[in-house]
Amino acid sequence: ELGDKMTETLFANLEVNEEKSETLTAFFEASGFESEYPIRLYYVEEPVVNAFAVPGGKIVVFEGIVDLMDSWEELAGLLGHELAHVEERHSLEAMSRSLSTYLVFSIMTGDVNGVGAVLLENTMMLQDLSNSRKAEVEADQKGFEYLLGQEVSPRGMIDLFVHLQEAEPDLGEQG
Image (tube, rainbow, N blue to C red; front, side, top):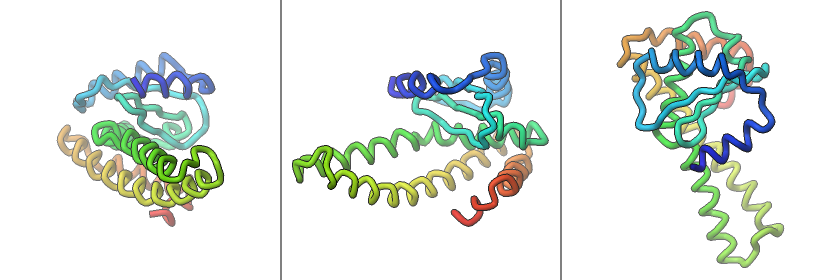
Protein backbone atom coordinates (compact mmCIF):
# COMPACT_ATOMS: atom_id res chain seq x y z
CA GLU A 1 0.00 0.00 0.00
CA LEU A 2 2.86 2.35 0.85
CA GLY A 3 4.50 1.51 -2.47
CA ASP A 4 1.24 2.29 -4.29
CA LYS A 5 0.98 5.71 -2.63
CA MET A 6 4.62 6.48 -3.36
CA THR A 7 4.20 5.40 -6.97
CA GLU A 8 1.17 7.66 -7.45
CA THR A 9 3.10 10.66 -6.17
CA LEU A 10 6.28 9.79 -8.03
CA PHE A 11 4.66 9.12 -11.39
CA ALA A 12 2.74 12.39 -11.36
CA ASN A 13 5.98 14.00 -12.60
CA LEU A 14 7.47 11.19 -14.70
CA GLU A 15 6.77 10.09 -18.26
CA VAL A 16 6.23 6.32 -18.09
CA ASN A 17 6.25 4.46 -21.41
CA GLU A 18 3.61 1.76 -20.91
CA GLU A 19 4.71 -0.36 -23.88
CA LYS A 20 8.35 -0.45 -22.79
CA SER A 21 7.24 -1.03 -19.20
CA GLU A 22 5.32 -4.11 -20.31
CA THR A 23 8.35 -5.30 -22.29
CA LEU A 24 10.58 -4.86 -19.22
CA THR A 25 8.09 -6.75 -17.06
CA ALA A 26 7.92 -9.57 -19.62
CA PHE A 27 11.74 -9.72 -19.71
CA PHE A 28 11.82 -9.90 -15.91
CA GLU A 29 9.27 -12.70 -15.85
CA ALA A 30 11.11 -14.63 -18.60
CA SER A 31 14.36 -14.31 -16.65
CA GLY A 32 13.05 -16.71 -14.01
CA PHE A 33 13.64 -14.39 -11.07
CA GLU A 34 11.17 -15.08 -8.29
CA SER A 35 9.74 -12.77 -5.68
CA GLU A 36 7.27 -12.87 -2.85
CA TYR A 37 5.93 -9.62 -4.32
CA PRO A 38 4.12 -9.07 -7.60
CA ILE A 39 6.90 -7.30 -9.49
CA ARG A 40 5.95 -4.49 -11.85
CA LEU A 41 8.51 -2.58 -13.87
CA TYR A 42 8.19 0.99 -15.11
CA TYR A 43 10.25 2.40 -17.96
CA VAL A 44 10.67 6.16 -17.60
CA GLU A 45 11.66 8.14 -20.67
CA GLU A 46 14.24 10.44 -19.12
CA PRO A 47 18.01 10.48 -19.66
CA VAL A 48 18.64 9.78 -15.97
CA VAL A 49 21.24 7.06 -15.37
CA ASN A 50 19.40 5.32 -12.56
CA ALA A 51 16.93 2.67 -11.47
CA PHE A 52 15.33 2.11 -8.09
CA ALA A 53 12.90 -0.08 -6.20
CA VAL A 54 9.76 1.13 -4.45
CA PRO A 55 8.25 -0.88 -1.56
CA GLY A 56 5.90 -3.62 -2.64
CA GLY A 57 7.60 -4.77 -5.82
CA LYS A 58 7.71 -1.77 -8.11
CA ILE A 59 10.94 -1.16 -10.00
CA VAL A 60 11.58 2.06 -11.91
CA VAL A 61 14.12 1.96 -14.74
CA PHE A 62 15.18 5.16 -16.49
CA GLU A 63 15.96 5.31 -20.19
CA GLY A 64 19.40 6.77 -19.44
CA ILE A 65 20.64 3.60 -17.75
CA VAL A 66 19.17 1.35 -20.44
CA ASP A 67 20.94 3.41 -23.12
CA LEU A 68 24.29 2.53 -21.50
CA MET A 69 23.73 -1.20 -21.88
CA ASP A 70 25.18 -3.38 -24.61
CA SER A 71 23.56 -6.70 -23.70
CA TRP A 72 20.53 -8.36 -22.19
CA GLU A 73 22.80 -9.76 -19.47
CA GLU A 74 23.42 -6.21 -18.28
CA LEU A 75 19.67 -5.62 -18.03
CA ALA A 76 19.31 -8.91 -16.14
CA GLY A 77 22.06 -7.76 -13.77
CA LEU A 78 20.30 -4.47 -13.14
CA LEU A 79 16.97 -6.16 -12.53
CA GLY A 80 18.58 -8.72 -10.20
CA HIS A 81 20.12 -5.86 -8.22
CA GLU A 82 16.78 -4.03 -7.96
CA LEU A 83 14.94 -7.24 -7.10
CA ALA A 84 17.35 -7.68 -4.19
CA HIS A 85 16.36 -4.22 -2.92
CA VAL A 86 12.70 -5.29 -3.10
CA GLU A 87 13.25 -8.65 -1.41
CA GLU A 88 15.45 -7.21 1.33
CA ARG A 89 13.01 -4.29 1.84
CA HIS A 90 15.82 -1.74 1.77
CA SER A 91 13.66 1.29 0.96
CA LEU A 92 11.05 0.39 3.56
CA GLU A 93 13.74 -0.09 6.21
CA ALA A 94 15.28 3.30 5.36
CA MET A 95 11.92 5.03 5.66
CA SER A 96 11.16 3.23 8.93
CA ARG A 97 14.52 4.26 10.41
CA SER A 98 13.94 7.89 9.48
CA LEU A 99 10.39 7.98 10.77
CA SER A 100 11.14 6.23 14.05
CA THR A 101 14.11 8.52 14.73
CA TYR A 102 11.97 11.61 14.10
CA LEU A 103 9.21 10.30 16.36
CA VAL A 104 11.59 9.57 19.24
CA PHE A 105 13.28 12.95 18.82
CA SER A 106 9.94 14.77 18.76
CA ILE A 107 8.69 12.98 21.87
CA MET A 108 11.90 13.65 23.79
CA THR A 109 12.24 17.32 22.84
CA GLY A 110 8.71 18.38 21.99
CA ASP A 111 10.21 19.88 18.80
CA VAL A 112 8.24 18.47 15.86
CA ASN A 113 9.26 20.94 13.15
CA GLY A 114 11.87 23.30 14.50
CA VAL A 115 15.62 23.74 14.28
CA GLY A 116 16.22 20.45 16.07
CA ALA A 117 14.46 18.58 13.29
CA VAL A 118 16.75 20.17 10.70
CA LEU A 119 19.85 19.21 12.68
CA LEU A 120 18.52 15.70 13.16
CA GLU A 121 17.79 15.39 9.45
CA ASN A 122 21.37 16.32 8.54
CA THR A 123 22.73 13.84 11.07
CA MET A 124 20.42 11.14 9.76
CA MET A 125 21.53 11.86 6.18
CA LEU A 126 25.08 10.90 7.13
CA GLN A 127 23.85 7.69 8.77
CA ASP A 128 21.66 6.90 5.76
CA LEU A 129 24.69 7.17 3.47
CA SER A 130 26.37 4.41 5.44
CA ASN A 131 23.23 2.28 5.49
CA SER A 132 22.60 2.83 1.79
CA ARG A 133 26.14 1.73 0.94
CA LYS A 134 25.52 -1.47 2.90
CA ALA A 135 22.22 -1.96 1.08
CA GLU A 136 23.89 -1.42 -2.29
CA VAL A 137 26.60 -3.97 -1.53
CA GLU A 138 23.97 -6.44 -0.35
CA ALA A 139 21.87 -5.84 -3.49
CA ASP A 140 24.96 -6.34 -5.67
CA GLN A 141 25.75 -9.64 -3.95
CA LYS A 142 22.17 -10.92 -4.04
CA GLY A 143 21.72 -9.76 -7.64
CA PHE A 144 24.86 -11.68 -8.56
CA GLU A 145 23.42 -14.78 -6.85
CA TYR A 146 20.13 -14.36 -8.73
CA LEU A 147 22.01 -14.31 -12.02
CA LEU A 148 23.96 -17.44 -11.14
CA GLY A 149 20.75 -19.14 -10.02
CA GLN A 150 19.22 -18.53 -13.46
CA GLU A 151 22.45 -19.47 -15.25
CA VAL A 152 22.85 -15.94 -16.61
CA SER A 153 26.42 -14.78 -17.04
CA PRO A 154 27.31 -12.39 -14.22
CA ARG A 155 29.58 -10.70 -16.74
CA GLY A 156 26.58 -8.54 -17.64
CA MET A 157 26.47 -7.09 -14.14
CA ILE A 158 30.20 -6.41 -14.25
CA ASP A 159 29.87 -4.75 -17.67
CA LEU A 160 27.01 -2.61 -16.35
CA PHE A 161 29.18 -1.45 -13.44
CA VAL A 162 31.90 -0.49 -15.93
CA HIS A 163 29.38 1.50 -18.01
CA LEU A 164 28.08 3.23 -14.89
CA GLN A 165 31.61 4.08 -13.80
CA GLU A 166 32.34 5.57 -17.23
CA ALA A 167 29.09 7.59 -17.17
CA GLU A 168 29.52 8.77 -13.56
CA PRO A 169 33.26 8.70 -12.67
CA ASP A 170 32.58 10.00 -9.13
CA LEU A 171 30.61 6.84 -8.27
CA GLY A 172 33.80 4.85 -7.76
CA GLU A 173 34.96 7.32 -5.11
CA GLN A 174 31.78 6.83 -3.06
CA GLY A 175 32.30 3.13 -2.40
